[in-house]
Image 1: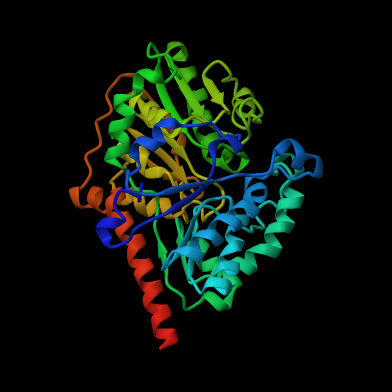
Image 2 (image 1 turned 90 degrees about the horizontal axis):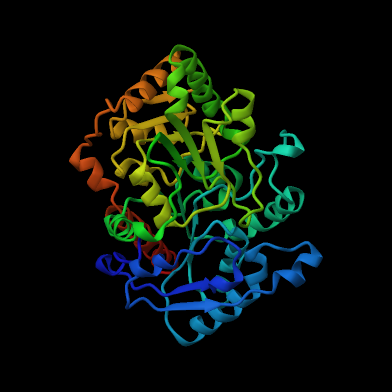
Length: 409
């Protein structure tokens, strides 16, 4: 989203990425259509997972670490770069920032789209923890300090993540930081629209479809419980709605295709809603996700019981301009964002009363096609465009460079 606008704000980017054939994640060839043709992209290898898995190491970050080190060393040796920017949730790669900074005196910025080291799962049952949590938790505990303590700037989708890092590592209290979420790209929405014929139909348009696209997990059950309870009550009052309404949860697992664990469907079964709720664990491509949002009758975004959770990809939901139902923790930064966009069906599961009744009213309006198309303040939509948020990134980049210059003068 940022690459088309970096040059406009005075920055020329060079990208280093893992070659697609080394990743088990779903591929989205259309992503290349949005890349500026003048941005060089260097692809690196990764060790074969069939070999590393025997040692219990399947992470793409760990498998590619050596090749990143080798390629970026080569680039830094022959060209002049002002900054290294890590924008990935494959956090172990970020530890190389400290290595390159020491060797080449190039500052680096880490973008936290999720927390890296976290104690969130410490008191959770084993069944609710991610796969190989024991190993990743301990790895992150030891390598996050190396990467963060030496960082020259931090970006995050949540101000709470930055506050936690500063509390954990006093070394970064005074470095430049910024809260920047994923923006809404009109370029991407146009690509999705023009290529809808390429995507499989994820839901039947004969039904009224409430759609969520994104990860699932037990931490979202508080929000989802309220919706399922409302649906259950709704079917008691209007039994024929059970033949009309479908709730879709799409792309709920990060696991490779066909290997994801259902986290929403079992909950639906407890409410007797197995015929109404559809969960697809396989991740879908970015543009396929945008097309799904565009084809839905209404959208739902469940928040986590983790108060720092912001739903970093919330803006594509908003810019789809569909009736939107959002249920979050009252301390989530998402509440402020939804308020700016004047989303009236925004609820806080730990504060608001009668949420089920409000959800039923939302669903009735959706089923009867009585919901109105959202109308957002123009200044707000502009402020959260991909272009405007790229400017916020580059302002922080400039601050990092100036901070370094002042420190050495």
